Image 1: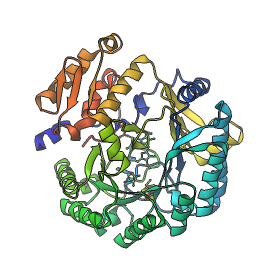
Image 2: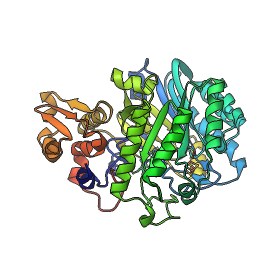
Image 3: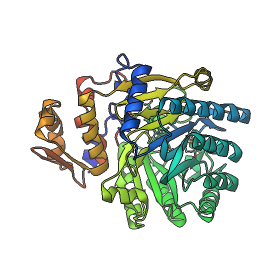
Image 4: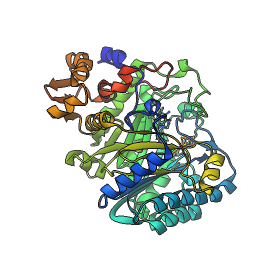
Length: 452
Ligand SMILES: C=Cc1c2[nH]c(c1C)Cc1[nH]c(c(CCC(=O)O)c1C)Cc1[nH]c(c(C)c1CCC(=O)O)Cc1[nH]c(c(C)c1C=C)C2
Ligand SMILES: C[C@H]1O[C@@H](n2cnc3c(N)ncnc32)[C@H](O)[C@@H]1O
Ligand code: SF4
């Protein structure tokens, strides 16, 4: 296993989209094309509903491991203008659609949604629901910071339909917490987890990371033991993505030599996974574990599991609109990303403009490859019919997989590929075999995190 880890630990995309952002064809993209794909996806899926992601970028202090798009500030007077802008952006989209949108999924991410006051968050969600309506089985969720989520936040969001929350835990060890500038005692996580359950949330998630600076196998062991005490319904167990070259990201306060080696990181993953399994958690897909009764695991068994910019979700909607700075939207036929600066964002929406700055329209090849990568990431297998060979070169893909086949990570049939149990930690590498854009043009600079 160790040799495999060394061998396959290469830079690679996380495939929250295909094509991945660095491979978007910016020249053949326009706001006009984008709007036409949004409308098409909307009209083609009247019954599925749409997904909304809202990015709330502010945080009071900078965690140095964090790869998310955020703005560090203590100026809470920024809250209201930002929320008004998000509602304006939503209005622009609603005017484009020819019917009242039905919302299947709503996720508040960040940054720190709980930076905002409960009143402002309620105002935001009520404003969204004024122009749209919820499906009966809607999944409304948010990311809560254990250090500043209050009972009032949980209650306010519960009242407007939220039933799922995830908290950033990362690691409970003091040395690790100091290194990532995030002092967060167990008591805080316990308090917010208990409150959520008392109020009636049906799914509480914890995010845990391995491979953090100064983190050891025994820190992971201890963090898992403490996690078991609180019994979260879902656990995201992420590999630390070291991407210090991303602009505005604070990954500096520690040295590369403070990070665990590839081998140590793999041991942390193996132990974490073993412990989670022994506690009764099910492995859902890359990075995700859940109790058997959680919707995410049920989706895996039903074959409806889907992956988008939010990570894994229980079902697919054709249209996902991302509101707020840096958010990415997915219209099935295209992707578009919003501008990253708060000022520019607020300026654009105040002029009635959809605030995107780049995007990609999928051609027939992209759509097929995306389908297969989604199958690999969500169902751990994929198959194709002969007519697809006219559009993509499966021989090339099979060639790319030969070495992984001989290492026992996949089985390859004439028109079927299946990830083995041993191959599961390598789904990113296996997906890379399908990424014809990556094979045609290898990146010249570092853009992706390591796959292990
Ligand atoms: C709450 C924080 C977010 C996490 N993922 C996203 C958010 C908002 C959404 C997201 N993730 C990526 C993109 C692509 C945009 C881009 O500019 O490349 C978006 C919109 C990809 C990504 N995420 C992480 C990295 C390092 C990258 C880019 C490079 C790569 O594919 O490796 C880090 C990271 N962010 C989040 C997680 C869980 C995570 C790493 C495990 C959360
Ligand atoms: C939303 C969740 O994303 C995870 N997260 C944020 N940045 C990184 C990173 N660089 N590597 C791995 N996980 C990360 C945290 O666990 C957070 O809670
Ligand atoms: S981990 Fe959360 S609180 Fe910390 S900087 Fe990132 S978004 Fe902000």
